[in-house]
Image (cartoon, rainbow, N blue to C red; front, top):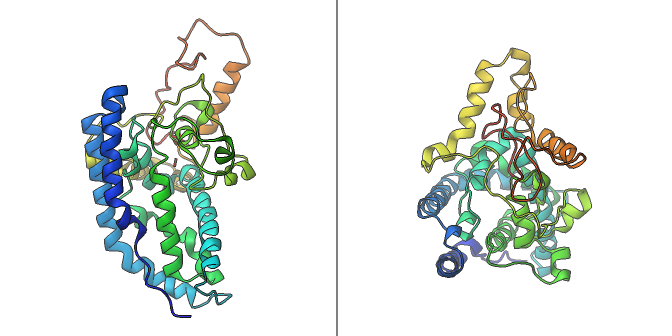
Length: 329
């Protein structure tokens, strides 16, 4: 069967992205102007533009590697429509594995943190993408699909469809979808949880399209009506500087590796964000454990109640932007 000429779904969707961002801006102007902050939106758009340039520059190398791996394929998979459907599902599973790793391994988090660094949650946040995806080797997570036998052009096409789907879930304008849809698909409600820094929500809901992966692998957390998500990263950037937003975590890794004892150096690369050899920092696990312990005892007057109604201590001085991932995306 002759391979079809497949378009790039993202390129086709770009005009729609722009129109929807503008429409959401109009809605926000009448409902809640705080949903958009001009400097934050400009930063997101510029980071998205830089990510596009980086993707163009690395596309040839990624495709060449995909074709090389495909030479050793286990099966010859054709171009029938049902193989596209199978590829779409398996690619979404590969995305789940990548996305979970991007929050649990600091090396991958250094590239992914860009997407979480906005304290706003709107459609422009969906365009806030990494400049260092090729350097972090995120493409490795799709190599098993080529080894199985899915043609690279097919995989990259369904990956583009996956990315287009994820655009619309970056909004607060939509509350919840019908219950059957929420049970199977990733939605704005599920993804708001992923982008939240609330301890309850940290490192949850990694799905791209199908939320069933989170339900299957124990990483699902529903959005609660009485606990509104707080967005960003555990220790906020505090800057709209593009270079700092794109590279701050890589700089943090370099500094930590240089300063750490020899035996601890690899841990600052491959351990979870926030890990330290002397336990002086907080990971998402320690933040969640401390939060859970506070829920087990009566409210303490030592700390003010947060907007979720639970008491929380002020951030530890040891917490930094590389501390715990603000759980995706």
